[in-house]
Amino acid sequence: MQDKILSVDQSTSGTKALLFDREGNLLGRTDLPHRQITPQGGWVEHDPEEIYRNTVGVVRLLLEQTKTRPEEIAALGISNQRETVLAWDKTTGKPVYNAVVWQCSRAEALCRELQSDPRARLVPEKTGLNLSPYFSAAKLSWILRNAPGAKEKMAVGNLCCGTVDSWLVWKLTGGKSFKTDYSNASRTELFNINTLKWDEDLCDLFGVDPASLPEPCFSDSLFGETDFDGLFPVPVPIRGVLGDSHGALFGQGCTVPGTAKTTYGTGSSVMMNTGRERVSAKGGLCASIAWGRGGKVQYVLEGNINYTGAVIKWLVDKVGLLQKSREAGEIAASVPSTGGVYLVPAFTGLGAPYWDSDARAILCGMNAATGKAEIVRAAEECIAYQVAEIVSLMREESGVEFVRLCGDGGPTRDHFLMQFQADMNGFPLEVSKIEEASGAGAAYMAGISAGLYNETVLQQGGRTVYSPQMPEIERAALCAGWENAVKKARGLG
Image (cartoon, rainbow, N blue to C red; front, side, top):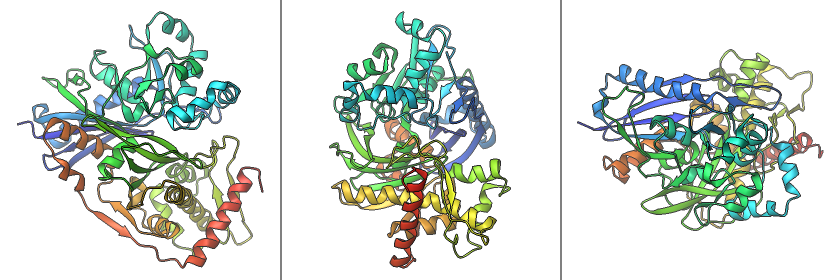
């Protein structure tokens, strides 16, 4: 009986497989990490073939762990790290270069070069995004300029270019299907979110042939079928594809205007549903497509942060202040405050709302009393400050009545961080009990599309509510200190 939904969540740090029953309950999860390739400072790459091997690998492990037969799977959903982009040979299926990751800053000079082009003004107008090395187009342009043979393959129609979802769909279907969904397409700076088509002017600006790009589809489309390289005796349909942040929004049930979520991962996305009409992005925010389903699209406002969970990982891997990331909250809570210490994690510049590629990380405000706990607390607090800035901007400038804010991702297990986040927001934070909201959202999209679920599945799991406890005068003082620290990181103070 086909009464289970399989979901693959391909994230920045690894690939997860998740299994859900016919009520939308999570039955099991397996994951595998992949290498973070850093050829030089500020550059980040992934091996696309390693990602695909791990995708098949986590599904195999999940079936073994849960003792599930492939015949029980009704459909597959995919959620993926966004903006990360790659190009591959259509004939051989081999990437011409590693995937260039959303965090990577290598396209800074290229974006500066394009700023002088009159067509650059079309980018925010047509895509809702700021011209930035953060998004896919400039990274893809870099690949086309620098990967041997890439331009030549494109010229003869033998190059596929796309985000990670389109690579996985192509590989999983044995090259039969080359598709992406509207949520992922809307993050490339090549897609017109008004017309729902690849834009010829933007493609020309970045030197990309539209014919090399995947077919953009509604998120609940049939994207093809896969047997996972022979693992399944009968192929299963791929019935839902979403960028990870959009998957989390859907998985949290944020389907009406004014509902919002923040996903805590390597970086963070703060996203608010604005309904079926595009809302103009202001003050460093972006407008994107939430998803397309049932023949209609919904839009969002979003702010993206480069370093949130990655800040704590930096304390573990590079600084050595922590043995494991999960120690951070307990150590942060062991002192009453940072003593005026602020960490601004602009390791590869600042994302929303500043979009300042030249900003650099700083740790400031230390004195002789500053110790390990204060620095760890400053690292924890900087996550909440960044999220709160974006939430405040959304509420002020969207023109959409704010309904609620939900939280998801691994760091939501950190009670200190979640309480401090609620304090900095100044209103309650609802934390999903389903930690893997991105993968759950893709599963729910696929399950609804396949007819296994109805809309009630989006209320699955329940929430833990953190209410603000900090006096307003204290919150305002802390936020003012953060603003001053950011100015220093940007060379303005």
